[in-house]
Length: 333
Image 1 (cartoon, one colour):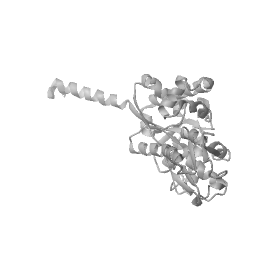
Image 2 (cartoon, helix red, strand yellow):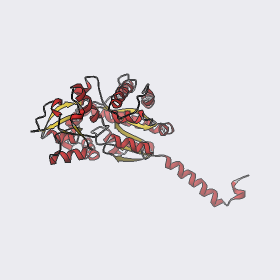
Image 3 (cartoon, rainbow, N blue to C red):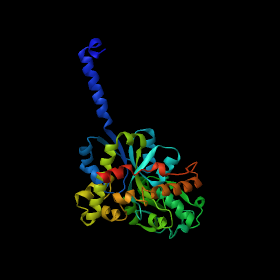
Image 4 (cartoon, rainbow, N blue to C red):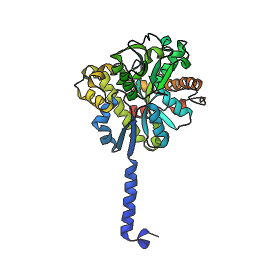
């Protein structure tokens, strides 16, 4: 039996229209970003990914990786930026996401800054002080690791959970003595503070951190072409920065784009970006990163988070939460 025998033609047309609209609506994605100063912001500004894929991209800014992860768990967000610590917490608790791109090697881009006049000159001086950091972030992880390595009992330190904008405001009011944070807030704190440790110095002791892009696993499977196009756009933007970093000045279109999407001061962007490292496609797929290093970093982080009571269990392996699929396909095309 055919539709025409039982329903008027207008109904058939309406049904086809609804089906077409439903299909079109699937070509939409919500991408959660933070305020990290990375080349991806130029892709966001240019709109090239939308033009290439035909997808409507909803760029939503969040205050921290924990917020991004929660939004992804609720289904409101399909792709997001998060540090290795919140990613570890998410997958350890069973969230079905995949790390598909290393947004940056944090290196020295996150740091512990003490306010001038507080008498804090080392980790050991944090005892009895108020130290702010966004909980379950890479900065929080490095702060706790740094104190442990230097024999500082965290119970003797008033570690306060604050998002970056809240840290900036608390610092201005004089409510905190120190903070472990990233740019653009980090640059502001440095003007009236002292660097005690960085994610790079702590990372070299065996506890590296990174910012990654994660995607809902099921969504990624259904939207592979978009994922490959995204990876290509990411690689292109990173390459432009690596090849032309000297031209990314405060008055360049690239830096203006980064400043716009992160609410940073353009003059702070070039020196801040220089603190990060951005792996290329080959490095992404290598054993250093997606080919093994990311899984190891997640595993090591999970052990520490369990000790801190942040996660209940450590998975036997974290390799299944990392994929090189889209990087490999991007390199093949």
